[in-house]
Length: 294
Image (cartoon, rainbow, N blue to C red; front, side, top):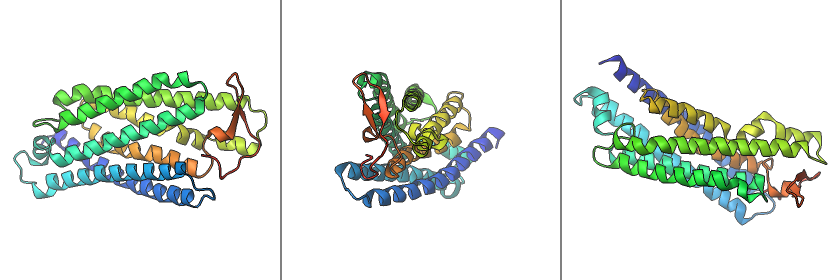
C-alpha cells in the first residue's frame, strides 16, 4: 500500500476523531442554550424557534457523524479484506446510501446555519435592508449547488471528491465560504461602526460587544477560516481534504449553535439592544432588559 493510501486513511481517521470531539462540544452547547432559553422569565415563540432550530441541527449533525463512523467500520472492520484494502472499499462505496445520507444531513445543516447567519446579518444592518441583498443571493446560490452536488454524489458511480459531483461541490464550497466571509465582514464592520457612535454605553457593555470572543461567535469567523482550508485541499485533491471535511462539517453545526448560545446568554446583538435614527445610525441603550434580548 502506497503512501497516498496511508495518507487518505489517516485523514479520514483524524477527521472522524476530531468530529467526535467537536460533536461533544456541540451537544453540551445545545443543552446549555436550551436550559437558558427555557428558564427565561418571558417565554416566547422566538425562543421556541431557537430551541427547535438548534435541535434540528443537532439531529442532522448526529446523522452525519453516525454515517461517517459507520463507513469507517465498514471500511476498516467488516470489509477489511476487500480488494484494494480499505482505500479500495472507500473508492468503490463512496456513493453508498449511508454515506450519501450523511452528506445530505451535513449539507442541510450547512444551509440552516447559513440561513441563521443571513438573519443575523439582517438584524445588524436593519433598517438598511438592501445591504443583505448580495449575501442573500450568495446564500441561495450555495444552497442550490449544495443540493445538486449531494444528488450527484449519490448517483451510481458518484463520488463527492471526484467526477461530476466535483463540478457542483467546488462552487458550493466556494459560494458558502464566500457567503460567510461577506456576512462576517458586514457584521464586524457594522458592530465596530456602531460602537464608535455609541452615545450611552458603559464599560462592561462595551466589553461584551467588542471582546474578541463576541466578535468571533457573532460572525462565525472560525467556520469561514476552516472553510477556506477545506476548499484549498479539496480543489487540489489532497488526502487532507477528508480531515478538513470532518472538521468543517462539525463546525457547520457548531457555529450556529454558538450564536444561539450567545443569544441565550443575552449578550448577542438584538434589535432591542439599540435605537435607530431615521438616517440609519445606531445608538445603544444604556440599560438592557435581559428578558427581552431576542
